Length: 367
Image 1 (cartoon, rainbow, N blue to C red):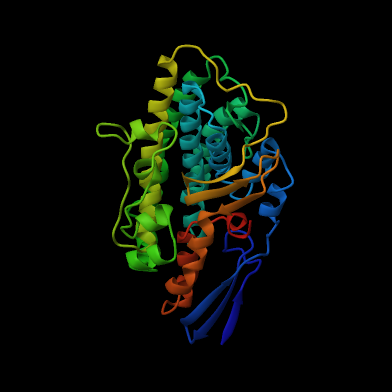
Image 2: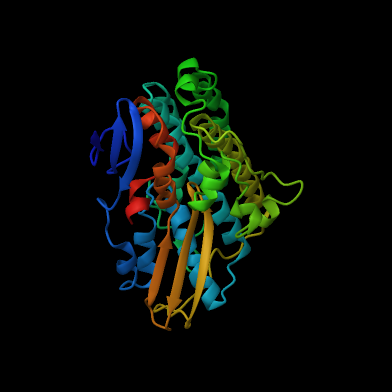
């Protein structure tokens, strides 16, 4: 029997369609059909200047807006040969890690919801609100921050803001055990996820899967350590607070555990960045650039470790105020494609548990 799951099914992240073939209760094959939210972002990039592109770039993965902006500005800065001030480097790193926690908390709440546990999502949103408050105070935006600029950040940090960041992080740390007590060791969650949807390390590598999904299968790759940008070289140096969370089981439970532990790591990194910013002397937060910004001719590929995996921008410039080409490599696209390997052989009742554990945002798939 051929079944359509979606394209507007309440148990999938947004508008995803799966065409599956089942034999009784067993899935024989699965084909993800994408494009229902396609907005042509890559073509829109070509008719907007580098300030306007940031508006579009932070929207394809709406849970990772700040991280999406970073790739664009880093690529433009590399072609310009611009070195941003130290305070901007540490502030960007701090905001990227806070954004990572916000992303992961959403999935820590929504994934149990897909398995039938209603309560955890309320606890995770309590923690999200605490961190979103400081992000909103800084940028004015709750989801789409628009705070990066080529050459640094939009404006300086508000007075007393770093103290409020420390307070928010401490509050989230204090309350996280409430959320974790509902899901860690939960018999029903473990029964639905342990040994289910096992993704082999080799398959993850072959499909270009990255981020928490790949690291749960033992693929030891994290750009923050392996190809450092911003301040990650210091954070992931020996003795630093950074560490890469790895599991080898490759099942739904391992993917969930990686996400959960990464929240604690990112809170450590954010704390370290806030301390470093408080110790830096006053100074500029950006580089003054011309009102009409033209990037020199050339091409560059800049990738970043986004919350959901590798996010890359291939920028080709011909010296104009708009890019000649800006190609986006999004993490969620590969995470969804691997469902063709994960789902065959599994039970229909495990379908939602597996789909939810691949942690994708449909806008990031369709672009």
